[in-house]
Length: 326
Image (cartoon, rainbow, N blue to C red; front, side, top):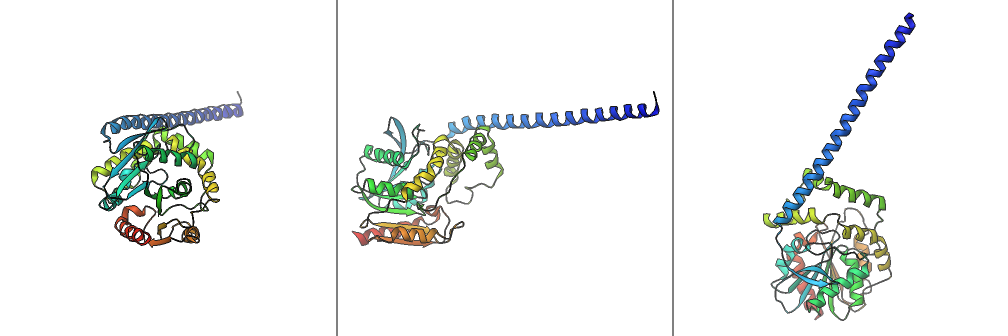
């Protein structure tokens, strides 16, 4: 064997060793990632089962379209306030607790948890505005609630617009809690939703919440309520109904652009004064009230979940507003 051949042989042997080590390292990394994902998935399953055993039922079930819709009723006032949640609120009846406590001395308060929210069942029906509105109305009919103030947070501002026009003979007034307007929406790519599904199923959503800042830590709830809200957050986050609602969001908003509140219908908006994303928030709400005879808007230095921190002011101003129009 010549010197050159010996040199090439040594180089080939060295390359084979490097390649072998590289393959082993990559294989070890893949196995470690797979093991990590398996642990995350298993822990999530165990936690789900454990948390469901600690979940404390609240409210009552109402039969809607052959399924159970959960509602919370508190207070015994002559007038009734029906509360509707924002998109993806895991436990509406618990989330609205500060506002319920302020309203219930003066009103009968009914919190509706739509399908996929709180303790309500899931449904196979598409989350179109028409279906959501009809289901909420069926729940109220089942409770014999036939005359009420409709109060909606966030996306329920769009559903409330349809609701008022469909059941104007039942609704006394509409109250928007930093409610959405049809002209301000965004399109979500379907591929993003597929990733979100995988994110939840794998247990990575639980891990990300656990490693991140506790979203409930600084909120005005007692520790027991916070614990129940966390359980329902893990249970309901990115469930099939919420994801389907996101799929329909653009078309639901688009359809609502053709609808307006009746001219003589009382409306009051409680809105955050400084929206963190758009400067059109206040002007678009003003546009909704432009032709209203009984339209009013109040601005607060608050975030989107205005009902958590401004419950007292909302209640006081609602009572004053209702006194003015009656």
